[in-house]
Length: 240
Ligand SMILES: [Zn+2]
Image (cartoon, rainbow, N blue to C red; front, side, top):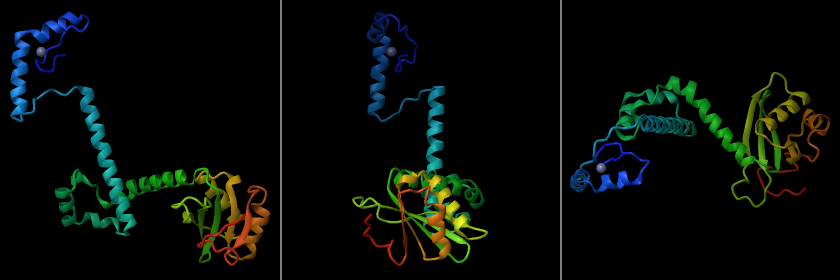
């Protein structure tokens, strides 16, 4: 296809193309196009079907990214989603943000985009913790809410020194069995190798000790049990 003359050419023989390139018609068209380009006129050309589809997919992917990032930013700043239903804010976004004209309503964002943010975050977490040696921190807040945090133990990783909250569950009952199950669920959900768990940290409650010594001992062969009082997990020095 000669894009300048907008004609199809026989591509099997090279001579056909050479002849066309030397033809008066083509040279005229090429000169005309050159003038147009110099004058800043973009040539109108019909899009191919494939090109059209490609552009559409890229545009919808860009929109998806924009909405996910927006929801993530709102969640991170602790701003309720319904603020995005405010007409003034919507006008501002649609006027000033590229592709911001059709941000969905808060309801739709909560239903469809919050889970996407979670998935994205989870994927980042998994890749961040992949292959790392970790300490598991089980923290019972209140009577039934249990937070499970993982602390990467690679001493040379400047970014990896912070413990990350991986799971929060509301348990019906808190005892050695439910805690052990929760820890296993959590480790499996973020793909941590059981052999990479080097420490288990919790408060000094009897069921926690029982959970670690009876429940998890066989599964996590390399772990050492610590309590908040003997190992300051917010601090730093680990030696096993
Ligand atoms: Zn031509």
